[in-house]
Amino acid sequence: QLQASGGGLVQAGESLRLRCVLSGRSFSSFALGWFRQAPGKEREFVAGISRDGLNTNYPDSVRGRFTISRDNAENTTYLQMNSLKFDDTAGYYCAARISGSTNTAYFTREAYRFWGQGTLVTVSS
Image 1 (spheres, rainbow, N blue to C red):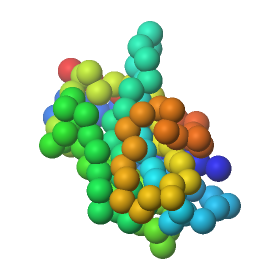
Image 2: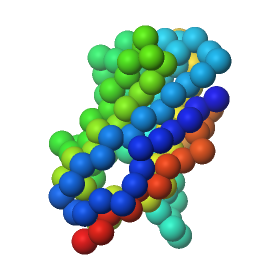
Image 3: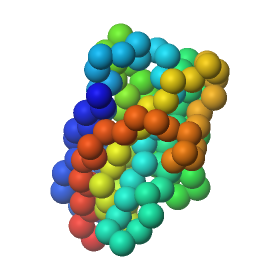
């Protein structure tokens, strides 16, 4: 089970840190990711991190502003979001997949099997 939290209402230029806890499973076996979905739009990839935490992947739209990390001792992945923009407004979803590879950061929806319930981020302009 994936449980995301940390969303909220912020002004443009501010920061938020999202948190997602994976319970009931061997956390270190999972590659992790974050996606977002705005009203009327497709769910899109935001960040991915490999099992070993050494490789990450971002789309151009967030690279340099967002950082994904993981704490295997706490079964938690984080998404640090800086310099937020109005266009970052969306529901944010964490995702996980069991990965045989320790160093692959996945970036497609189809790559992930398990999904959290989402947390809403609203950025006012």
